[in-house]
Image 1 (tube, rainbow, N blue to C red):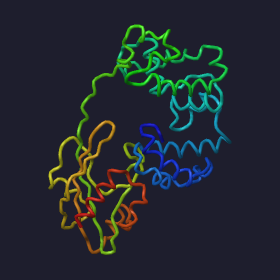
Image 2 (cartoon, rainbow, N blue to C red):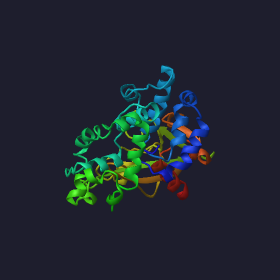
Image 3 (spheres, helix red, strand yellow):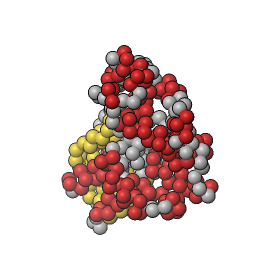
Image 4 (tube, rainbow, N blue to C red):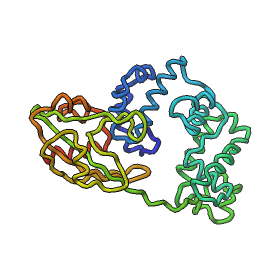
Length: 312
């Protein structure tokens, strides 16, 4: 959960998630939509899908693999996670490279190439940080000590070089450039995409929803019917041509949501109908308006629903 998310945001989700899925077996046996619903609001939903698939594979294997290669083969487990679990849980003498360890390594070796281009160089250099006999004898303690060093003394700004146990061998400290490393390439402006989504509710206060495709952004999550997300704004006529049914649609406003690689602007349209025809109902599924918060809805769709309901 902490990948791409803050500790403050994760806390409540983490405790609720463990209450709902207290064991790997319980998580593996759960329905995927139940897992996505428990994750809704945290973003990066591929993590939840991979976590569920990973639990199923671990159960099928009879337990967790205890080496880096075996851990890397699990769904959603990358180089850092595999190395961290191997070192901390199973005592494998490897160095997990997170942001803290990247920063330490960049300073120790005075790597001035900016991130992200420098990542491969830093990962290769970090592999040699544990060559000391004591470090290899205690892989778990060494990995966690590295994390703590980066989170405290070797901090992003104003590193406490005078207190660092590696100050004598730190090339960046000797060159007086420790506080400037690691360097980062200038950020590229996020592109903007545009879409339109439709909230339609019947006399029984049911909302029409649908599932997103199994692959791609927000895969398998629940959403309001809508247009594609594209680089050009949708005209009202163009958007309404893709409405799920004929109704007296009213524009409610725009929801702006920031993803990792782009910003999305969604124009929300809302309407009431007496009832849904069989054809319209079959394009998705109906859910009581008062219970949508319990579905696997991403944050952007919760914002759209809130705006649409306010207009109705």
